[in-house]
Image (tube, rainbow, N blue to C red; front, side):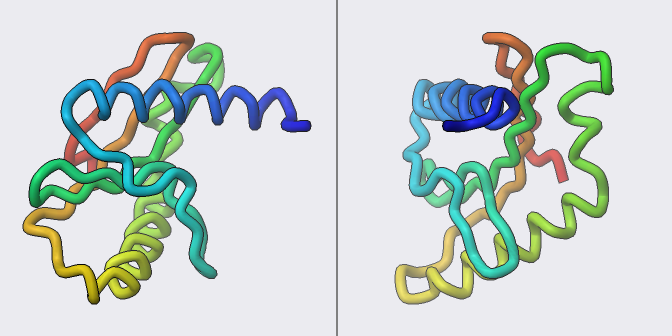
Length: 116
């Protein structure tokens, strides 16, 4: 059974995924894992491939969701995305690769496109 924190994170990922689907994106993967880590959402619309880090918070008590995506976390996500792209080479290269951050507070979702 997931902890309260895991349930909150899963709920946030579902809301973020819905946000993208409503805007015409296809969900390629949720929680894509490699030896180096995990990417919350991998999505595609046309030639744009999006790697999305989802941050869910119950409140701003410990800062905004976006503040949790530090430069160290950004480097980590880029490394995992590189592993994804290497594995995907047989499928072809996307035209554009983008890194987004989805911030979820309650039922509110805001997405920072091209966050880093």
